Image 1 (cartoon, rainbow, N blue to C red):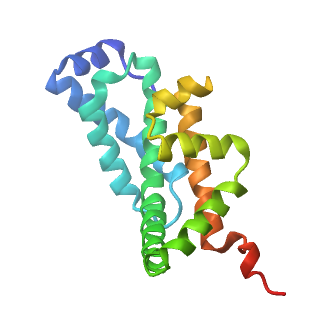
Image 2 (image 1 turned 180 degrees about the horizontal axis):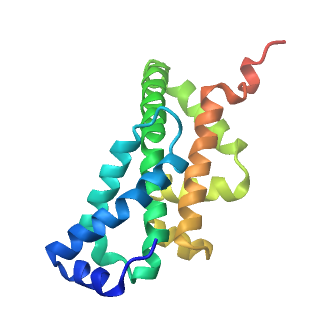
Length: 181
């Protein structure tokens, strides 16, 4: 993909003719990227159209013409993943609704015991971060500062800890008292 620097600069400045020419020039490459990235059965033309819209809206955020190809490849890759992500989210949502009714009808004392056991089953670094976030209600930044880790690491630990708690509560490990003899 070779884009003339002057045309790219004009498109970034908002010149409608340069932007139209840029979009026409990018379309075959975007289609090729989409064929490479998207799974069979995906609507490749929809991905191409969405990618062109993103270029139209965000061309000003690309630092230079040389970075355009890499940026476009990432945009197309993300667009190709959207249908799979939406399907996974809808499946998780349905499962969560089904499982939440189980917890809503559970006696409160029994639920507390299960939550304590789930927290006790966590490795120390996950238990600490979930207690800081959910019990002490610290922000992500405050947790990161207290644990001397990055914000991203704090978010990751919280997500993993909650996933482990969810797994425990949904039957990943039987509660010690309820195990079959």
